[in-house]
Amino acid sequence: MGVTVDVHEVFKYPFEQYPNPMDKNVISVKIVEEKKDVSTGIIYRKRIAVCQNVVPEILRKHSGDCWKKVNILKVPNVQLEEESWFNPQERNMAIRSHCLTWTQYASMKEESVFRESMENPNWTEFIQKGRISITGAGFLNCVLETFASTFLRQGAQKGIRIMEMLLKEQCGAPLAE
Image 1: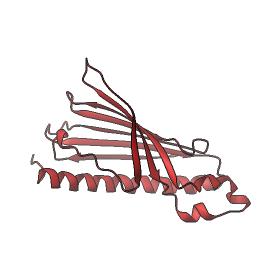
Image 2: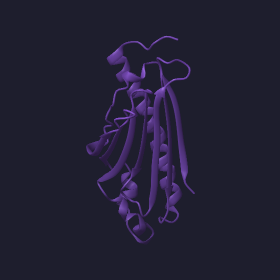
Image 3: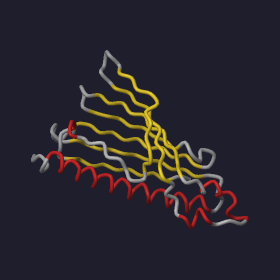
């Protein structure tokens, strides 16, 4: 089946002010590739992030016949691969990430864009789309997808609040129209 999560927000701060906050669930980030296209100025990065497993303990602790398929959830950390394309000339950044853990049971992908707002060139538009599809866990597929969807929605909203707080701390009050 699968679930999708879409987020759209406009920050009343210039694109150049975009901070890069690290979520508290991120344990480490390693840049595995970085290059700059000399002709376009686009900076490409590929990173691997190690994050805490946020699947609720109740789903990780159960055992028995009906839970054997989800024993894979009993990992302390999850790995994500993130690719980003930063274009300073056009004032935009695209980010695509997916989960490297649980690939035989779940497909988790996310695409984000930060770009100059069409409404006001001094504002930054943030668009994020995520999709989660879980298979191989029987009747728990729907439960796990619902949890993942809720977690992503809450995480996106929390990320927006953190971004607004960091922007306000670094830049002061938002820019007026």
